[in-house]
Every structure is written in C-alpha cells, then in structure tokens.
Length: 80
Image (cartoon, rainbow, N blue to C red; front, side, top):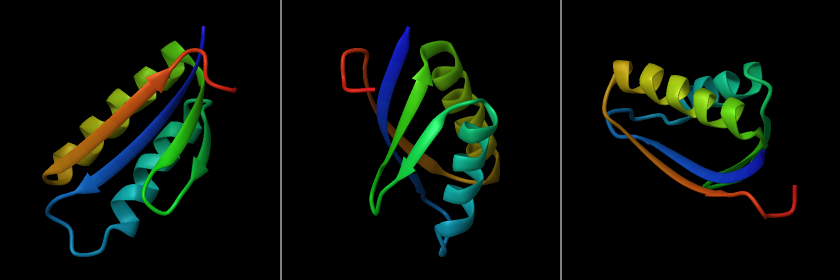
C-alpha cells in the first residue's frame, strides 16, 4: 500500500537544526522514499512498509544523538 506522510523533526538539544534534519532525510531517501522538503515539515511518499521502517530508523538514529520530537501524519488516500 502507498502512503503519504507529513513529518516534522525537531532536534531538541541542537542549536543548529540543519544537520540532524539532513541526516534524517538521507535515511528516508536511502530506504526508497520520495521526500519533498518544506520550511517546517516535509512530505514523504512511498510504500507504507518502506516509509514506516525509514521513519523508525531515522528516529532512532536522531534520538541516539540527543532529544528529538518527531510528528507524523500519515494518509493512505492522499494524492500520491
């Protein structure tokens, strides 16, 4: 099943957000997800298993580096 998710990643212990967010996006891309980066959130599209697995891995990697907040809204009937 295809899924489209709006995600926001907020590293809580980082002064500069670009590096943790960039690393998170790279994890999503390496798992075959399409990513459209916006100013406050990004849209991730792909097979639901790939998207949710990539979100899990990206979150765990970010959380190992410090506090992080991940907000996810997922939809299986959004325009893909």
